[in-house]
Amino acid sequence: MRIRPLHDRIIVKRVEAQRTTASGIVIPDTAAEKPEQGEVIAVGPGRRDEQGNLIPMDIKAGDRVLFGKYAGQTVKVAGEELLVMREDDVMGVIEDDAGAVKKAA
Image (cartoon, rainbow, N blue to C red):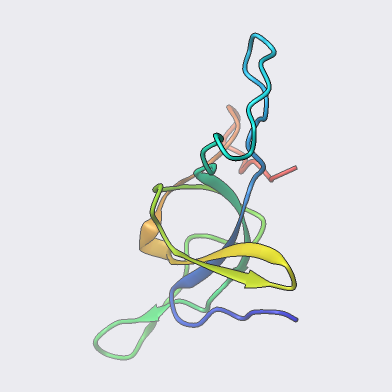
């Protein structure tokens, strides 16, 4: 099953949180916070202005993004937990030092 977001919505898959601390202590799943970074899976066409002109999205599928702790709506599709959020909920796109967009591994 696939989801096609409408308007200025995006579908994001959270990246896995690091399960150990720098000193090697393993953090159980129940104590670990959900990561606030994710990979964009799908992007809607964009929103429309008052004249009906399409405003394209700045984010594209494959981008790694940073979002707020309570951003978006969680949905489960084929056993996978995904977030549906508006483009406005994204705080930024994670890039490397050369300015290239960092792809989620």
